[in-house]
Image (cartoon, rainbow, N blue to C red):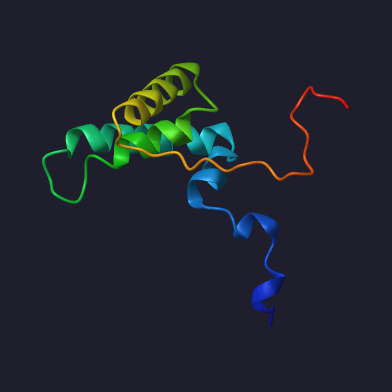
Length: 101
């Protein structure tokens, strides 16, 4: 019996990260299904709004149009305050990139 700490590294990653690394013949139908399901089932309370962005995130590494659209939607949502970016400050011992002392 395997211990809980002995899980492989990809087991700790989220489902979207694992699907983005999935083979093209698996990720494209799953992503397209989520996008189509999100648009057709949008009036239902549980389905809809979360399915289309999730499908775009899965499709992005496999299709240039989805990558462009997901980046555009992310920029729009940051600009309009729907998504907040947590900014962290650099540690004192780290130099700025490109600055050599």
